[in-house]
Image (cartoon, rainbow, N blue to C red; front, top):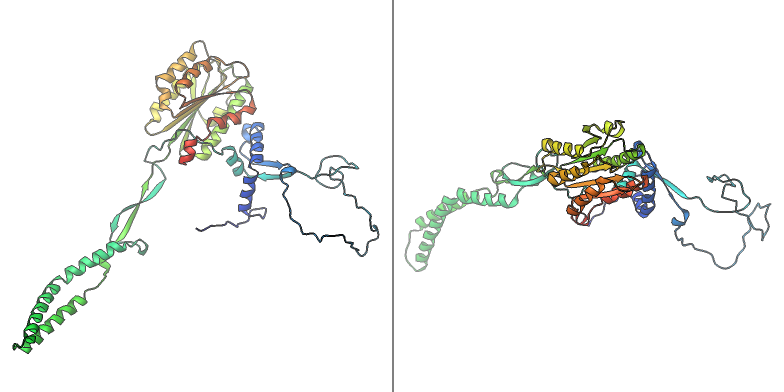
Length: 433
């Protein structure tokens, strides 16, 4: 088994391998810091690195030292301040010296600063989206993909030496030699049989014509030379393995982001919903190259919008949630065939809905929309009791638990845990990965 060790230096003049080992060792501290950062940052400031602080008690390592043993004394030349037996006080470290502490001057106390280091944007996002995946992702749609696999496509007569097929080449050479020397071999066999017969008669005492025997031997030698001159291997015999690049089925997916922007959604609630979708959007665009995202905003009517308008538009109105589900169903039929696309949806709302529209939402889902998607997630953002839409969706969750999930968010601190819970990689997906 061979091992490749990457000894390239990064900007801090430390090995990249050592840095990865260090990040794995303090994984729990980094995770907690990243989770706190996700909850504390604004939606525009999520895609950057983070400073991680590790308490001194967690970075202590045992050290083996070699002492001289026994009791001894040392005299340092040039010492004018201390005599034998004097104790040298340790300088204070909690702001009393020129260190990095932020405390005020003090005449007592000692300690050590906590260890802090910076993780990059890539390392930050790796930790944010660790162990997350789109559930029930199935490989669909063979065409228009950039993923290829090299596949054996038969034998050809031209190619590079590295692709030479030795068995087929030697088989062709043997067949060619048999064809080219077939007549000579047949005539040689006849002459050898006749020569053997004459030699047996000569051995039994019968008189034979020596001139005729010599002529037969000369002809046999001529045929043997012809056979020997047949090339053992010719360029005509060479055969090469042929390989072609075959496109592979890829995970072709579309994610529908549906957000309620009605008047019942307070600005704080909208900001929480935006943070959730920002997290989802970063997750999708970072981990899946072949994925499309459709943004739908709704109040009394639904509209497909751009990414910028979805996150930052201030349009508002009443609340009819079913309009968004109907628009989503329409877009699927027009552009995203379930036979070719893995379809996902994430919906955020405060649960408030107009009159009997929650029942209509349940009906739209049961009449076919839920069967079109691989996974549908609903988050209700409210500090109060659940609204009518929650109770309508509860019936869907009990009937379609494999493809429908719903969670409740109270405040900003719930965003990241709920997000990870919704998109946590399943055990069977980990085993198949």
